[in-house]
Length: 235
Image (cartoon, rainbow, N blue to C red; front, side, top):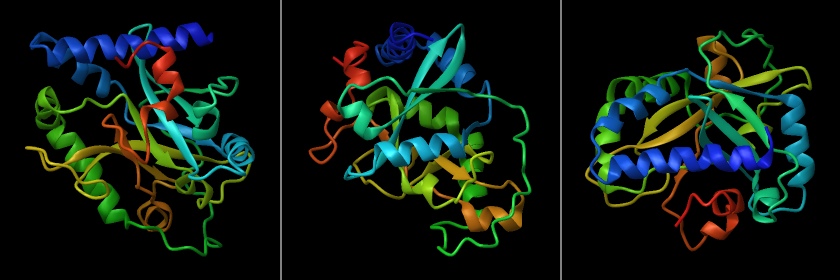
């Protein structure tokens, strides 16, 4: 895809959610359809290595996952926060939202020394919340800032210790942790990242400190999201 096509995809998502928020209830089914087209996307060790190079002198180190619609499919456009802030769009990774089983589900993580922030039970519970309450979450977004980007700490990927040929799996969850704000709905959308999908290994590799944008903050202003601004999807 060209950069212009990525802009268009991000703008299509914005147009759809704006229509829904303005009172077009027919869009609820369409949005849910996109969010349920797949179950996950994958990130490779090679991609993490490139982010590590790009973010070497950055603070904070983050990955921005933009939602977009291309050819009637939900896609994610991933870019490191430094490149995004500087409007350097040469390394945007395009991710299909798929239901295909991830490869290499039984990778060895016995050398992982840093304990993960959540257990397998918590990761499964948060994904279960998404599967059960996505409709309730969506209804709450009519009066809330609707997610266009999910900001993921780079550490979520780095600490998995992926080899170049390995990959991790990223999927939706609902959490009431991390950034707090007044809302009628207790949970916000997140991306949970795991290296392995087996229960014993997931508890060693589950990462979850992602944050939906908007809303933007003083610490993380919209100027950090040049891909969003240049797509014309933030007004």
